[in-house]
Length: 284
Ligand code: PPS
Image 1 (cartoon, protein in one colour):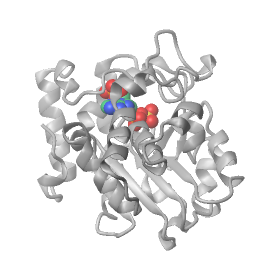
Image 2 (cartoon, rainbow, N blue to C red):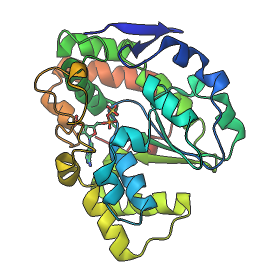
Image 3 (spheres, rainbow, N blue to C red):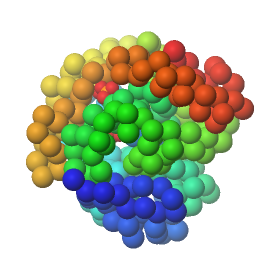
């Protein structure tokens, strides 16, 4: 079990991460106009979105997603391996990140690179994170759901506060190189979300190709795909019993929160997100 790298008050995972990278990435890394960036607060559907975008790029052909691990197709910019892979890669890149806006490479803000930001009910991201951080060695293992819940509200979890992360990236929501998606919408009407991504990326898929994207990005197919289900992860990084593709549902928080926690969460959500139109957060 590793603890955290603290940087500017935000805890980052230690295993596979370099403090220097986190520190310098915003000044050093050059984002290119042709890059496509997948961004999310941890446990919000990042990998689902990567899979979907990879399939869209290949017009539904699953060969790429079935032969190359997800972390090589769209490396995490802030990890040691991901950073090296990306700086050495020529041509258009797919880049993944969980970084908050203020730590993301500055070069992005004067580029035409496209960002897709996916949000998920933070209550579900909290629960998903509890299992993920408990079953992996990237960062401190939570002691219990109770302590994890308290840490989440304070932003003392990997990548910091959901509220700050979301407020930061949502400030870009009117930019034309920014697409906002929501895990809950992807669940309810995945075809519609895929069409939105195609429009945003300027990709034209015929209905059969779209059906293939839908099929190969579905939870059950991804769960069986060893290039996407994290079964190829180095075993030094995970604890026994680790399952990445856990439930893939909405509203699992209702199985875990106590009544007091439901109230405490609502209060903090209101305090932090009151200025945004409620329609931006289409979850129960
Ligand atoms: S990470 O580790 O932060 O990059 O995790 P991330 O990919 O953001 O989120 C993991 C959760 O997304 C679920 N998932 C999916 N749900 C529905 N459909 C598909 N295809 C899919 N792929 C991944 C995954 O199961 C995690 O959620 P939980 O609630 O833990 O199941």
